[in-house]
Length: 169
View 1 (cartoon, one colour):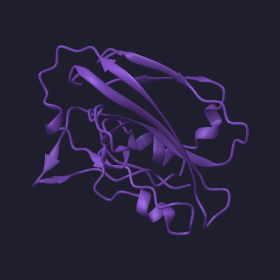
View 2 (spheres, one colour):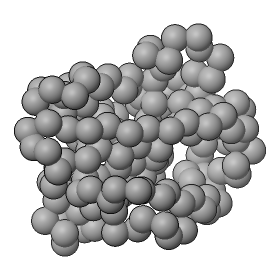
View 3 (spheres, one colour):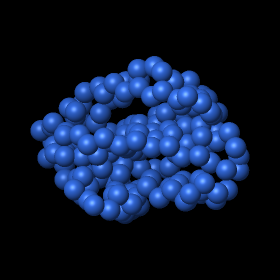
């Protein structure tokens, strides 16, 4: 994948339940413990079933560092509230880039999913999660309580990451 360019992806649900999703990247590609890998969010997919079986274009950040990484797509289905169903897929990628950003400087977090009980979403919701390009206007227009960030490079405020985790439907 090339930093700064569009990435075309498509998902196909056999049961297109309501729920949101996202696209994440991790530079912990050599980790043997997938539970400890740290990811950062590249894009949100509110009400993800609307784009089922469609090609979706995601603009990759131009500042992505070069090297091996893991791209993670996820979806959480909310049709059985208070129970949440989680689905995820990963693929190894090589990022082509001239960026000098150090991957350790990108606000990243582990993706803890707490199983399938009523409290699973609370463990998935990350109050300190940061997102590269999660447009507030897109979420607000759809009545979804999602992230608020205008994009750009990695930003921290007073040592704390400025983003909220995935939106809720």
